[in-house]
Length: 369
Image 1 (tube, helix red, strand yellow):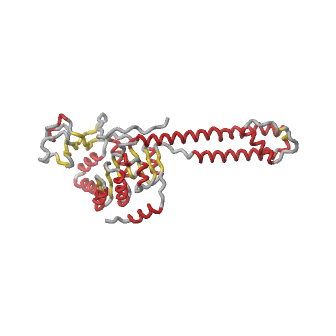
Image 2: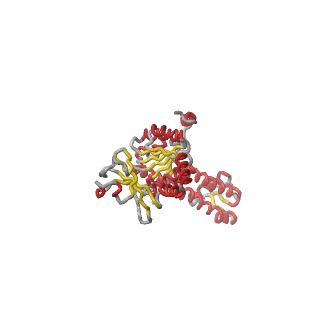
Image 3: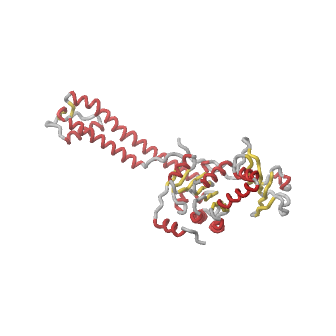
């Protein structure tokens, strides 16, 4: 099935080179050469202003070489005065020239040195620190969660996953909007600006080392392309995608998604349930909102539960996962629980309760020193 606009997106991806950048949870500094060029321009402006001041009061200066002070002499005097303490070959002789040196030339000399020495070294040091931090972050990033799209669906997905114990340092957001990525960085997430349908953008997010990929794009055709690209880069990651139209769900599963959520249909079913039973709707809303009230949790069977039936477990068991099958708690095929089974249970989250998902630890992302 061909989706609307798929050809247009493919042509746009071929015709335009999409720029992308990595944004860690802090303000990205400007490129060092651009910073140096900007400060050098300001320093040259200070030099020109100083030379024009000296030239305007040229009658108040003496040149040991003889003759008057011309424009070239004014620039020479400004250069050696701002960069050093001067050579004394051209010196202010009149009271006005000396007063100008005290009140104007000396502050300009201090400003000149601050611009060229202080801020330039600061810019180079800051950029070096940023590059080192980015390199170290990439080298330690693995088994993380990549979220494609930081809209309403993407934000809700991140909050739900983080509510179960996932650290913000384990989340990387990919979105084509720089403003959206800046907002994600402000909340503590690393971000990649770029089109996620392009493999080089996903490589920047280290998708090939990710454990989970959440695709929450605004368009179904974009979700299909992103899923295809992500699955090609990472064969073992769990990919969950959201689509608007239910008819596109099979196409996403064929593209490599492990689970597909139809946002429009899910919202419609919740609306219908709330109409039939507002209380049941409130319970469902509580279940899908992780971190408060009732939570749905997937966990392994512990040794003390082996040999028991789902009804005999202390937690409220909803389903049993055995191999690749999801069985209801009352399914006769379940029988007795086995050590390799996994349970989907309903637990009540209290302020002192922490339900942590079964995830492997990841080295923390480097922070500023």
